[in-house]
Length: 424
Image (tube, rainbow, N blue to C red; front, side):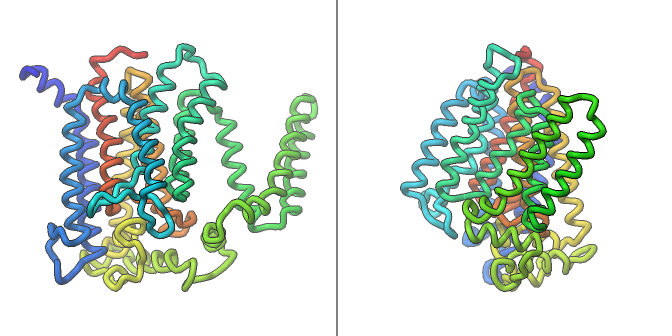
């Protein structure tokens, strides 16, 4: 690159997004230090501790990010199927040689480091989905393209479920928003999906026949008000029958498909059972830690819930508890604001892309990050069941940090080269 090209290249990089990424990495590093602080090894760079190792992960993530920004963006477009194939092989390999941790065979041991292929599966799926959808000769959305695209997403989901790692598997379903943005899924489909979730939850709390009676009244009301058009009456009748059958099937699916520990976690969130010393221990201690931080927190390294190991997995899945306890409501709001700023910026980047590949990929990045952000924080405050997924750039772990960094920096590479591309 000559000096003019170099200046132009670095001028097109979204440095604000990189600053947000680096800020989140630093917040994560210092809170990991606070979460698992060891008085005998107080140094934040001490490699005998998790916070020392995280400093290495952050440094290597930075190197990886720089390398991605240097590589030609067309490399990621052309090699998407190869990356997908390699990651699928890793997802199969982990089922054979993987190390079982807390009931999940999700890690491949590499010396003192453990590689988690499912984290990179999200990256590979985003790239391959963008590759496939952007290369369709028929640009109009159709069922065949939707089916193949869904298979691209569901294949790694099936492999991840075999580990079994339900949390990571669920993250892939956030890519539904990619199909929505590209016109393959209608707004009505999303509404039906939301209604299905609502009915599922309500059916667990209220007698199913009462719910069916309410559905009959609602559908009957709309059918009466729209009776002038026969089609509307028929649609209401179909909706009533489908909803009623669905509600009647909830109990069966709940008992036969979900594992006992999964049902237990859902029951705890819904308030059906109170088990603060058993299945509800994690959530109960999480709420205590966050609530004890009050408005401004107890101060850095002053969190008692954290220091005395009351909160399990406090440097990974429950890292937000440390932020809530030591930095309080204000610190928690600041962190959430940083995340929301990053997500809005990614959506803005997506909309200004000149290629379908980059736009589709960008929405994949936004969907995956939002799912992890919402579910991780939601489970620590009792909004959703505990499913065990990391908080992006904050939770301890090399696989998580590297995969999210690669996911984001590939997008930044596409964005930096958009002025030299032609829309497709």
